[in-house]
Amino acid sequence: MSKKKKTKKAVKAEEVLRYLARNPSQLIRNWNYKGAVLSGLLRAPIFLVTYLIGKESLKVALGAALVQFVFRFFYAGISGAVIQHFRHVEPAWHALVAILLIIPFFSHLLEFLFQSAFAYMTATTQHTDEAIIRSICVTIISALFTLFAMRRGVMIVREPESKPLKKDVSKLPILIFQFCAFIPNEIASMLRRRAYLGAFLSFIGFGIFSQMMVWAITGKSSWTYNGGKSIPLLKYWGIDALLLLSVATSISLMIPPRSRKVSVEEFLSIEELKPAEKV
Image 1 (cartoon, rainbow, N blue to C red):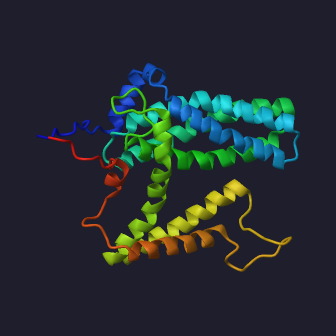
Image 2 (image 1 turned 60 degrees about the vertical axis):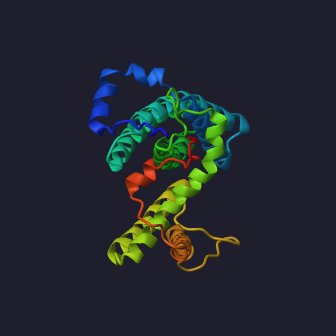
Image 3 (image 1 turned 180 degrees about the vertical axis):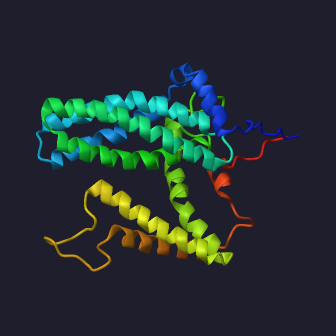
C-alpha cells in the first residue's frame, strides 16, 4: 500500500511575521547558502557592467562588483531564509505581497549604504544610482521566482526535502520555463472561458510592466539601430513584450487545455511528478 505524502500545514503571513520577530536568530540558523551563491554571481556582474559602461577603470568596476558580491552573499542567504519561511503561507498571494514589501526594502536600503560608501570613496556616485535601479528590477523578479521555486521544494535548506545545490540548479531551466509560461497560459485560459476583460487587463498590464522594467534596466524608453534609426511603435519595449506575449498565448491556445484549470496558488505550490511507489 502506498504511503501518503506528508504535507506541512498551511500558515498565515502574519504568523510567519510574528515568528520571525520573536526568533530572528532563525534567519541566521537557516541562512540559505544556495541563494547566497546564486545571488552573488547574478548581482555582481550588474555593477561590473554598469561601471564599465560608465567608462570607469576595470579596477573600479571590479571593486564595485566585489562589494556587491560580498553584500549579496551574506544578505541573500538571510533573504532566502525569509522567503523559505513564507513558502507554506496560504493563500499564496499573501506570501507574494509580504515578500515584495520586505525583501526589496531592506535589501536595497542596505545595498544603497554599502554601494554609496564605495561610490563616495571612488567618486562614482552616478553609476551607483544606475546600478541600484537595475538591481531593484532584478530583486522583484528573483524574489517572485525564488518563492515559486521554494514552494516546489527547490532552493531550500535545512529541511527534510532539501536537495544538494547541484540537483536544484539542474531543475532551474524547467522551473524558469514554467514560470515564464504562466502568464500566457493564464490569459489563454481566460480567453477559453470568455473572460475577455480579465484577459485584456492582464495583457495591457504585462505590457506596462515590461516597458517600465526594461526602461529601468536599460535607461532607455525605446531601442534604436544603425545610429538612431527606429521602427514606429515597435521601438518601445512594452509593444515588443505584447507581441511576444501574443505569440506565446496563441501557442498556448493551440495546445489542448488540461482537464482542469490550475490556479495561482496551485501554480506556486505544485510539486514535481514522482514515479508511483512500489507496493
